[in-house]
Length: 596
Image (cartoon, rainbow, N blue to C red; front, top):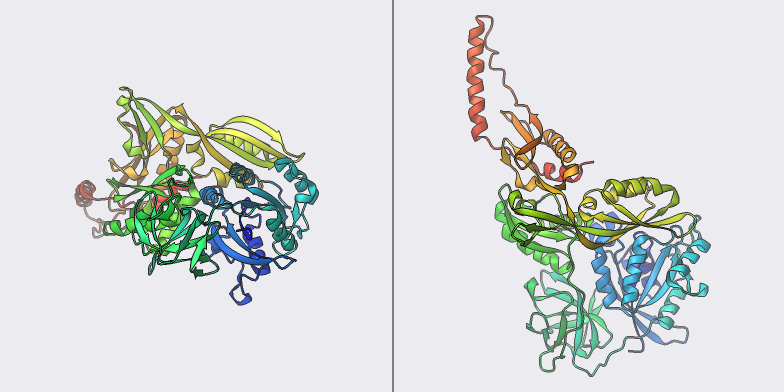
């Protein structure tokens, strides 16, 4: 155990985590040249296309120091986007140390700070690394001061490196060995292993990734999972290299995987403890708290017959992404589907994309919204995730909505636009601190519902990509909220309903009607699109009917002949309008998210 080191890499988006991980793998000879490709750990197509890390990836490396001692290094590369922060918290639970990577051209960003606090709370040894030192616009002295301010280390502790050229990688490996403590634990004690991730394989069932705190696990052992109380045979245990490599046994301090032929995804819970059946441990490991979704949206199959298939797809996806939550629900317009909880808009987009690519599922997603606490006149409290679940207005006493504490770090010249954006979103400025002469940290209290749609995109565009943003939920506050319904020909489309602040309802309703008018295809009859609050219509647009010229065959003659034909057509249109259905295309549901 003295020769094992478990560590993760934490940083803001695009600070070069995955590139630096590539250099570490090459330097230690873990990846052969023929197998190497850039961002070798980002093995999902989506990750490579978008250039972001979505999943944390564990891999084991062998390294010999200058004196010839052999060490085993377990590295977990983590995502940097705020929507995948749950992945980071799980990686931190499985490590003793962390490389804190800061981009020398950008300095410390909001996500760097929030992830760092999580690591310090878990008592991890922090090794600060200044990356991208080969860039012409690097500001080493300024960034060095920021790091010293943040974690209070010495000047010599900060390692200068470049993920692109490989400069400084040897110093990083030396620091990992000298500074990060080896894992503690007793190989002879009863087995305690923490599951920090799992993945579904069509042929072999579920792979559970774990970190052993105490005890030893061997191939063929009879083990049980603490939370589900289920028992299994360990058909295969091994370590995570570029491909899983089987081993006879793993001891305390090791990170590895177990295959025990589990086919149903409900039986594996991330954060659960694995122990032996004949000599169990007395208590489970303190795992990570259950994640609280930030926003909810309905996911429905395009074809109603695919409901069960969609359920099994989401369950398999949940194995690989424990921050996804779902419960069944039904909608008048869309049939049966699921109400899913996400950590943010990017998370929702990625889940939708993965359902399409990995499971070939065509789905419709409804307008995302946050959860509200509704208090009735009888004093009952109801948690509402869906606008259609809102009780009648006459029964409601008041509604509370979730508020967040947000930190925005930006260049000083963008303060004005950033403040205006936050105040327009009903935000309250709490604090303003200059980190350096040119960088400022703004703290806001904002309603979560206001940042769900396009806040992050707007923040990036007004600050030319410089501002960074991080948030956590702080409290529930009273709010004047109304339910905005969209009616097509007098029929309510429940999938387009939204809960919105009264002050924004009129403009939002008007924009929705205008957008739907563009997107709904013309029929043989007029379609009325209306936005309503309760019984009050606040906006209306009409999609004009496609007209057939019924008077084309009348050459000359009396006007009454033409009028008779037009009257007949009018009656037909009226009857058609009573029985005709209006199809709402998928683009209309998505366009509501893109309302600028």
